[in-house]
Image (cartoon, rainbow, N blue to C red; front, side, top):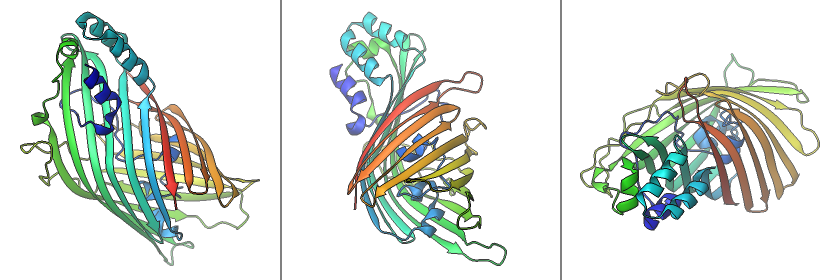
Length: 374
């Protein structure tokens, strides 16, 4: 039991997943905590190293070189109380059942990510060896149960962006693409409370889905021409994600030699607009509105709605950061980041919609990222 709880809590070394539990969330393949803090509305601003995943067209206006090595972790606010209650319940079936009933309907979420991104003029290369997300939802089937959904991704991605000059537009139109190779291990089960209390061998890895794919995104970005000292500088973006949408067709298997392919990505589109406001004191403020994930099977106008405001600040070239706030799928978000020389810290909190239109439900999540920037 202790080994199980540690595996769920310290998921960086675990590989469990999903096989039939109800799941109504829209899953993002990559996430920037800065973007999460501003409502995940970032496709148009996209001015940091995660631009290659949000809108590769933004690399067309990138000229400096940077290496970003990061360790990121995020979790649902209920995960620690649940862990402590399960630890106290021990191997008593009734106590375990009582704990599961106490958290009935909640979503337990943990996601550690380890990776690095190098960005130069017009291009980026990213290696993310570990991007593990684990959801376990507490419901009733015959008895109190845990529905487990887990995914372990390893990714290598390349992105390129540049500009096009046309006689129809006064400013250049930025365009870009990324291509990603992703290996995914994906597993699922529904575990009854009695199993949690009495069985240490709860996961049958022979049922794991596993495979690899190559897919990519295309992005466009346009900055409207304005006066140099204009108070409002609008921009527009359009991104189409997972264009091929061919699923995990490469039979690359490490955990289960007889595995079938995981569920495929879904081709989706994002449209957004941002306004950069006039610089004041040490701040460069911007506001963005996005409608994301259009085409996802779980998309609704509210689930796709992202609104955020970012207040980037710079005291010196070696001391800078941001404050931001936003609305993500109808729930508040907030974030903070500070960089001193090569060290950077980012914090964010956001709400994820895990329910349906008729029965909305928030999963309140918190994230921390520590990174080195050269």
